[in-house]
Amino acid sequence: MPSLFAKECQKSLRLQKFEALIPRIPSNHPVLPEVMAEYKKWLAGYKGEKSLVFYLSMLPETKYTIFHDLRLKLGNYFFQIDYLILCSSFALVLEVKNRSGEYFFEKALNQTTITNNGTTERIKNPVTQARLQAAKLTRWLQEHYCAKLPIAFLFVNANDKATIKFAPGTEQLQRNMCNSECLLEKISQIQSQYKEDILDVKELKKIRRLLITSHTPHDPDLLKQFNLTENDLLPGVQCPVCEHLPMRYERGIWNCLNCKTTSKTAHVKTIHDHFLLIKPTITNGELRQWLCINSSRTANRIFHSMELAYSGTFKNRVYFYKNKTTAAKATVIFPHV
Ligand SMILES: [Zn+2]
Image 1 (tube, rainbow, N blue to C red):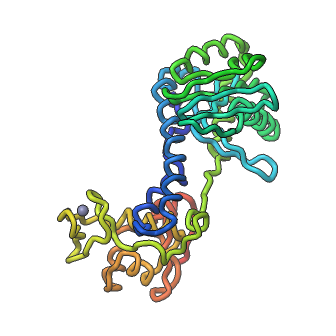
Image 2 (image 1 turned 90 degrees about the horizontal axis):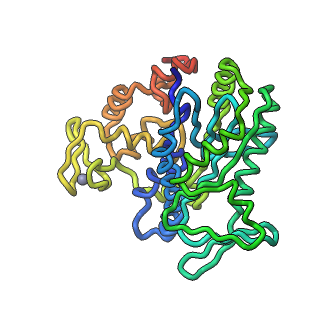
Image 3 (image 1 turned 60 degrees about the horizontal axis):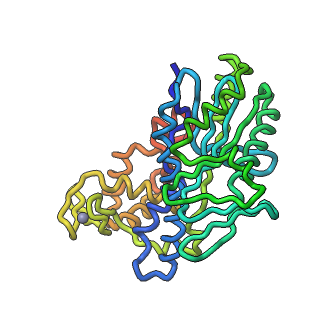
């Protein structure tokens, strides 16, 4: 039986990059506050989405399939859906927000504002955003020759501290929004509107597979975004316990000078950080610089232990972020592997 979550709620590549980047920015670097502010914004969004797993998990897996964070290409642009809930009679797009404060939906221009600690800012109307994603998904499914499925949409407020108010004449927006604790109730209401089965098991499977294979994760270049270069970053292996940089390498063991933790494998995450932040390849020289080690023999031993795929002759060898097994599975063929 297929599982309820076809695509689980996980941290995005962007969040993974932020978490690799932040410990490597010197604490006195002027860009750090901006990076932290941006990171907190994305993290709050993710936490809001994550908090819905509790409710969504209660949906019967015999009926529903759930996709978290889908990013699909339509024409020259991508569109992104926080959650897509799919069943044989309809699909439901969720736009999730996790902001505290008071939402106010105005009639004029369909405007939405949010007031928090005395300041009011205009935000994109989250119901309109959800409707737009649903419309894009409808077109996307058409372009992929899928059966015409009704697509409902909802703005879900995942923040307990947020309140939602409406100007007269905007009450109908309530049909397409809810607080997270009412999500299941709302889904069963929507379900009662779409009773007719439109997709058979085969078509459901096809759409499920199509969505998974078409998903293209956003891969932002954080260094570029914050005007940083590799030289701005602190190199070295990070202590897995206290996050101190760099750990010292002695006879196969990484030692933390701050908390005395020792590790044989702490470099694995550090090399992964390089692939995330800098580029998807690394040479022996680059590895030594990044891990703060001197010996090229040690660097080779580390490469060997990680079973990274590589190409090029010994001296000019370049290693890739995939290890040999995943590289083989993906049928990427490197001449010297
Ligand atoms: Zn430590």
